[in-house]
Image 1 (cartoon, helix red, strand yellow):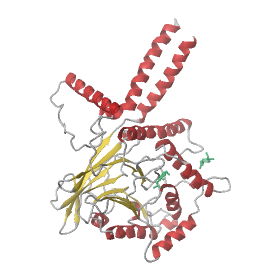
Image 2: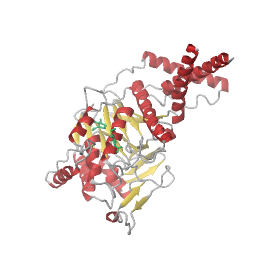
Image 3: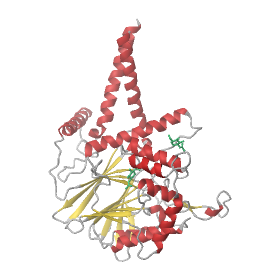
Image 4: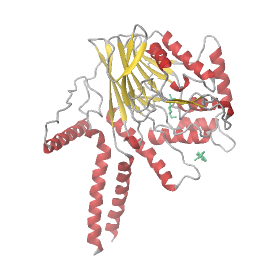
Amino acid sequence: MIRPLLKKFTGFTLVLAIVSNIYIFTYPSLFPERCSWRCASQPSVVGATDSMHVGEKVLYYSKRYVNDLMRQWKKSHEETQSSPADVHLMAFGDPQIKGIWRNTPYVTRLDIFGNDFYLGHIFSTMRNRLNPTHVAVMGDLFSSQWIGDSEFFNRTMRYTKRIFKRDTTSLENIRNDSHDENGLYKNYWVQFADEFKRRLTEEPKTLGFGYENVHTWDPEHEDYLFINLTGNHDIGYSGDATFQHMSRFHQLFGKDNYWIEYDRDTDHPWRIVVLDSMLLEGPPLQQEFVNATWEFLLQLFEQRFEGSTVLLTHVPFYKKEGLCTDGELFRYYPDDYPREPYKQNLLRSQNHLSEDVTKRVLNLIFDNGKPGIILTGHDHEGCETVYNKDSKTGDWNAAKTMQSPDFHVREVTVRSMMGEFNGNTGLVTGHFNHETKTWEWSFSLCPFSIQHVWWFTKVVTILSGFLLSALLVT
Ligand SMILES: *[C@@H]1O[C@H](CO)[C@@H](O)[C@H](O)[C@H]1NC(C)=O
Ligand SMILES: *[C@@H]1O[C@H](CO)[C@@H](O)[C@H](O)[C@H]1NC(C)=O
């Protein structure tokens, strides 16, 4: 009596498990255009389905899905290698991983644990599919800047190992060298602070901002360049960023401001600029940080670079209310702030850079008039804007469309990779056009789905495993 029922139920969960696994491992094939690099030859088929019946649409989308799967299978899409090779940058918005505390309920713990693997699934699927040349995480790696060193280290381990599948030996070595009496990671930031101040005051200022032609930090393990950006949840806004925040970020994730120039003395130079946009305005807690960021921009300007620029930064540039989800907002600590009196009146948070700072930064970075693209994070929802330059006044006006005949740059606020926002991957393709002698940049956003779909898949897979073995033994 029970056996036929069990059989039916097992069959049912097995089918669910198979279908959902196929889905989570092949989801980019459902949106082949949005989930691929842009090819120069790629035809645009916007609106192709508008006049179709439901049946035709189903057929169209199934065909597109299957075709993409076949292409992946054969990897026959090995694009005719252009020269110089296209730039393929994958951008992940604000993962904001949370921590587990003593009083965290068990369900939440499970959720946080699973979330690491959900994010890791997105990264692995996209990396295997697309072989990026660069991977950038757009800041707000963690959910809070107010955590101790040991927790900061533990989240770095999760970020490195579970999400981005990277080698953790160097992190373990750091912990072996830098720990407290219980062997837990501790950052000894005083030395960092002394060194930082010394470098900032000596002439010339040797803050070590520039690199050239770096294609990977770790040639033994990977063939793409991994870029960690810092966000307000990693080091804080300028009103609360301390040397401790800065020192541990530098030790575990690398610099917050730097540039990498590629192919400088060719006809196709381009560069990546990583800018710490939390430390441009104030009033700051440590004026040194703001000074260092402006020093960075000045040195960058003085490079007199002739190529195209990909600017990566966390806080978006100034724009009028209504263009994106977030409007302009600046908050300051109050006059009277007994909890942390030393923070009185300091900058507490900001949604955008101010109008004036936006103008100065864009003029310093996009001074050579070569096309580029800006990627930011911070607002989670995502947005695309165009910064139109008025070359007479040097003002930059944000709009939905290109308006300035003089010069414009597109800013893409990358939609978050968190489950609530459907686990997105941003794809930037840079292609060098030999006729115009310029780099052309395009962006697309590849969505996955809410984390519950991933959870469901894991649960039905395990359940069907149990049921199958139960059937076999009864
Ligand atoms: C970090 O991880 C270590 C090892 O698992 C653990 O002993 C330590 O308590 C963790 N730190 C915090 C703040 O939870
Ligand atoms: C970025 O962070 C990861 C994880 O800590 C690390 O493996 C990698 O080396 C960092 N990148 C740089 C440039 O330091």
